[in-house]
Image 1: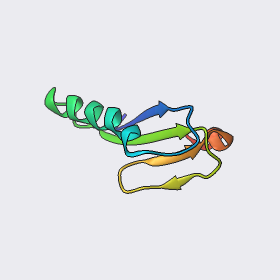
Image 2: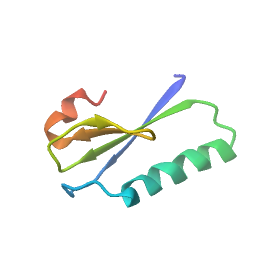
Image 3: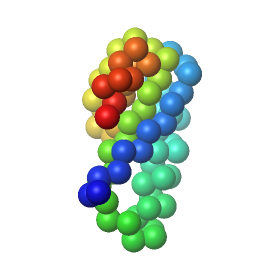
Length: 68
């Protein structure tokens, strides 16, 4: 496909900036090896609210069925 869903799961209920480090490193590594697919970073966490942030889509574990 033309898109790659990069999903990371965290158990914490509060989102911190550290959550996005691994997703960022993953995107950087793919770019270095010449992978041109669009990456859709998704973070599933233990909180209750789903939201869109500038870097990633954030999904509550309660809404994980809507991730794909």
